[in-house]
Length: 341
Image (tube, rainbow, N blue to C red):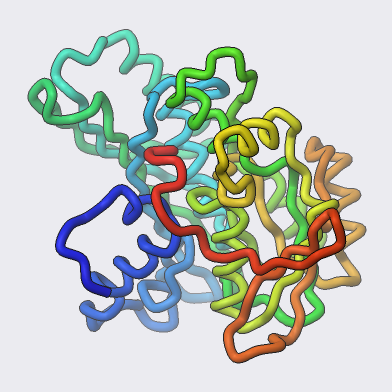
């Protein structure tokens, strides 16, 4: 890869982001893990530090730059809290403490900042997560676009972490609900489409992961944020060296999200979700898992596909279309929807 300038595509969470991370970090840093913990080598949603007795601390960090900071279904504070919880949840951790770092543009309304902090606080309170401290900075007007909210999460993993490389041939992919709603809501807001009624699905997915863990019906999980399920499924495939087949007729998508994607020419499978999970389970536990999810608030949970032995040298994700064809579901490229999280 040769680039002389950073582009918006490098922050979109797709092919360009992955390539840049490998070039700038994975290939450069020598010490990437602590003991047999998860770190820069694995590039999962959280890292882990073994602490003995089969337990690990899980740590994640994410900076949120969503535009607009208030959107249908949430705001940057709710997004930061939910996204941090979700990154811990999908590695199998129970969140216990957070820290934050907030940078605000000079002139930003104090009442709006209070709303953002209260949104963040309400999620932490609901899940009994302590805020240990943080950092606060102000940048001169026009040197920053409103707010950057960085959230650091610490969780506890009891047992083997859930990692992207745990997927095996024969495993089944379950989604907890309709995909793409967050990306669609942000896209509609950025385009000024006030008549399009799309709401973000921004929320913690921890309840869904807890259900799956209680049933012993989870091997791996992802929250399909930047790059949508297209990116998440490809990460499963590449890290586990399996092909993944998903069925278009089984993938739940709200009609308004479909319509917006078709109108704007955006691939709905590359649109972000901020309140859904992809859960990998064994084929004999899949139906039980879906039924349990549906009984507990995830009413549109669905089995959408399965993992198979790769038919070629390179693992791929295949989409069986509604009209009976098959296409490769590629890793998303380009800008997609800028600044969705």
